[in-house]
Structures are given as structure tokens and as C-alpha cells.
Image (cartoon, rainbow, N blue to C red):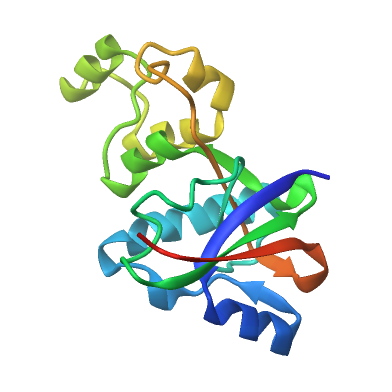
Length: 172
């Protein structure tokens, strides 16, 4: 079974011990990103039988916890190592996800980007967003083959039994 990593506020451990599971929490979503999250939830519903739940964000490789950007500086947090069935995780390209967050077209070439801007394509912006899930196609495209691909994932529930390790850290 695949192993993933998720960074969470330290309070999550208390919730896990109390409830036996973890779900996503919309209270922590920036209101400007709510439309993007709504779209991701719709994709999760279609692709991994999500039932409308908020996503829990995962990383396919362990993040460097000493880097900035995981949380506000000084925040007490945990990195959970979790084992989740493949059919319960929707993987996507982290960089391409920003097309969705920024409400932009997800082009695979400079030419396609230009044609979209000129209104000469039949694909919609929203249809282009589904490309974030096509990891190999993005990796081999002109626009997205500029380095190591960062793979993220979303799932709807993490059961306590799926947690392999809890690593505590303080955000830089």
C-alpha cells in the first residue's frame, strides 16, 4: 500500500486520539481559494468516491520540515506518515494545481497558451484543469518539464490505524 505524508497542526493528534480518524477542515481554507477547493472536492467525488468531504492534503515524498512555508513560523505541527489505499488518494501536480488556485488556463505548450488567450481553442479553462491529474503527460510537456515534479495528493479521511509515524516539528 502506498505511503504518503501530511503536515498538520499539532492539535490534530488530539482529534485523532479522540475520534479515531482525521477529516479535512474548511475553516483553514483561505476564502479566496474556496472555489478551487470546491472544484477539487468535485474531482474527488468523481474519481475517488469522496462524498463531498473537504480534502486532506498529502505529499508523495516526505517534505523537508526545516524549510519555510509549511506553517507560520513557530507553529507546533506534526508530519504524519500514512498508508492509504491507492483508490482513496487523488494525485496531482503541485505546480499545475496553481493554475486552478489562480483561476488560469493549464496549458501544455506556449503555442496552446497563446491560442487560448486568442480564443482559438475549444477546450475550456476548467477542462484544462483536469490535466493536473495527468502526471506523465505534464512531465513530458513543454510547459511542465522544467525540473523535478512535485506530486501532491488529496484524500477524504485518514483512520488512526493508517498512521505509521507521527513526527513533531516547529515551523520555520
